[in-house]
Image 1 (cartoon, one colour):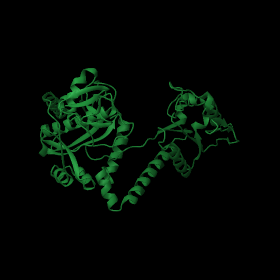
Image 2 (cartoon, rainbow, N blue to C red):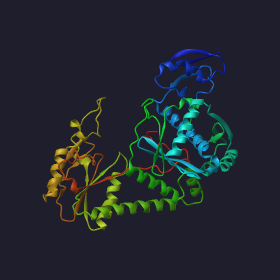
Image 3 (cartoon, rainbow, N blue to C red):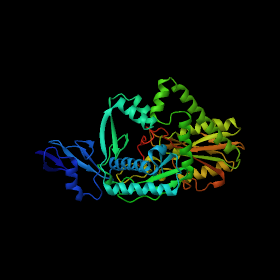
Image 4 (tube, one colour):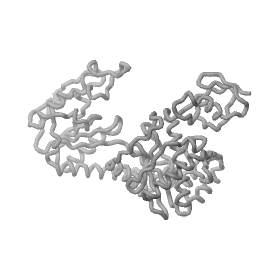
Length: 440
């Protein structure tokens, strides 16, 4: 017999008992299915055996590792169903590319037509596999054997990935004969994967699963065509440059091509910025370029590079940081914990900002403030500005797309830009590098 602590309670089990046994005992205490365990602070799959003296807690879709395990397992289920419906011999490649809204966008290529009828057949096959509660098996193989295996399966990005792997073993997951590599843990069997949907979109499909913290409710898919076009363009550039996946990037670096890759990427970004500047110049009524994006997304650097391009095309840009219009620190709003909430719109003196911008637009001279972050005070140090015919204001701040920030300025005078870091690089065709804020 072994003694363990489960959710703070002492329990005794037969030696060799799996975590799954304890999970079944405690399942009625959870709203959602238990998907994963934390054993002495380390994540473990439920088929793992318990060890004497362990401290065990369980995770569900209410936990980030739990929902990622659910997603990963659903992708395996999806791939198995695709191979069953289309026939492995007819499949060239299936890729899971990027998060799109509340779903995960992917594409499938081969000797078949990816249409609504086929997608429904795949979904139906997935549901059949769920009903059968088929075990998801895991085995460890030598890295060289994994390379040979994925070469045989035509998964060449996994083959390249393992060529640069330093450890000697690779974990392979299988579902009723279909084998694949996944960077992370899986649920014990297909019966856990009760909620999902497949939606035909553009040239591919969107896989929908419950979101982190949303229990079993499926989110509604809302097409985001503009975001899709940007993500897809980034994806295609990775393909053109030959670095869409980690294995390919490793290959280019090993060939000594890393500097060239950086220069190409810089050139591409500069061309993009020049194109944006051209659009602004072609619209002479635009007097305020409003740049927004998350914290640390590069708004200040981008605004400087855009200003250079605007100057090269005949305009005279002036940088305006919205942060310089912060209210004095003691007047800043606080969050529920009593800490200053510096990302709230109320941190900004919106009235003064709008008055100054309107005065500038109407030809008046304005003294631009500078916020001293050490003192927590807005100061005026004689930075006067008057706008001429060719002058344009380049404003940057996290709220610049919020019309409440610039409520007194005409929409006809504003050119809005949103910037954010895109993660075009995936581990391989079925494994993505998850961002810290990724919904999946």
